[in-house]
Length: 101
Image (tube, rainbow, N blue to C red):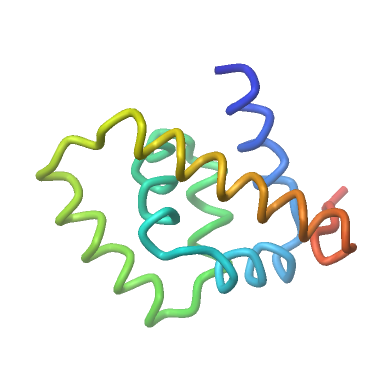
């Protein structure tokens, strides 16, 4: 759990342009899993919403509404977090992800 929180903190502190690139480069289904799993993390949710284009925000809201009706298997959540973390780390290492002060 502490490791997941660390990932969330990094994403929350990341610059908006890097977050936009991250959002565009990840699997949409995995992104929805992340948004659902972190729905009580207000700073992270705010950062993600700010980084989304209006059309993406609308689509994500619709998808999250559908997901709310279904239970997410733990293996699916873990796989999504692993893949998203790998992509975030890749973008961070290449300098695309930078951090706000």
